[in-house]
Image (cartoon, rainbow, N blue to C red; front, side, top):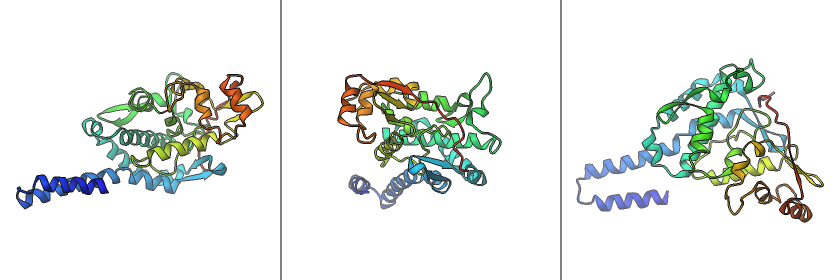
Length: 281
C-alpha cells in the first residue's frame, strides 16, 4: 500500500497544474487498477477455501468436486474473468504476478475439466482417449486463444523461460492422488515465494512419496518426468540431488545420508504414480 500511496503522490505532483477533475480521474483509474489486481483471484480463493480439505497430516488435500459442481457458475465466471485478460495486459505484469495467474488458471481449468464428467470418473485419465490425453484438449481460453492444459504448463509456464523455478511442479495440480496438493488458496503475486516454498516442503516431507533408505532415494515420478527442470540453475543447484539437498531438513536426512547424496552413492527409485481422482470421500 505504501508504494501505491507514493505513486499517487507522484501523480498528484505531476498533475498539480492540471484541472482538479483531471487529477481526480487519474487517481480513480490508479486505485481501480490496484483493486482489480487484488480482486481478480478472489472468486477462486473463495471456492478453494470452501471445497479443498487438508488430509494426510496436511501433506495432501482432498477436493470436494460435488461442492464445486454446485457452484459451477461461480467457477465459470472466474474462468471468464481470466479469459478477459489480454496479452498486452499480461505482459505489463511482474513475473510473480504472471506466474500466479498461470498457476491459478491451470488449476481452475483442471477442476472445470473434471466437472464435465464428475461423478462418473475415477481418474482424470478417463477424460482422454486412445489417441488423445485429457491434457491435450484445447478448451482453455487464455491470453487470446484456445489452449490445452499441456500448452499452459509446458509452453506458457515451463517453456517460456520467464519462470525458471522447479517448485512450480508442486503448485500445478493434475487432480490426482499422486500429485502435489491442490492448495486451498489462490496464488498471488505478493505471497508467491512463500506459497511455492510451502508447497515444496509439504510434498517433500511426505514420507509415503519421498524418502531415503540406507542407500536408495525413493521419490515421486515427478522428478523423473521433469528431471531437466531440477538440473537447471536454481539457487546454486544444478542437479536433482543438489535440489533435494536444499531440503535435507525437510527429508530428515542425516549427515551420512547427505554425504552419500553429494557423492552420488545413492540409487534413485521413482515411485509409481497414483492417478486416482483426488476427490473427497
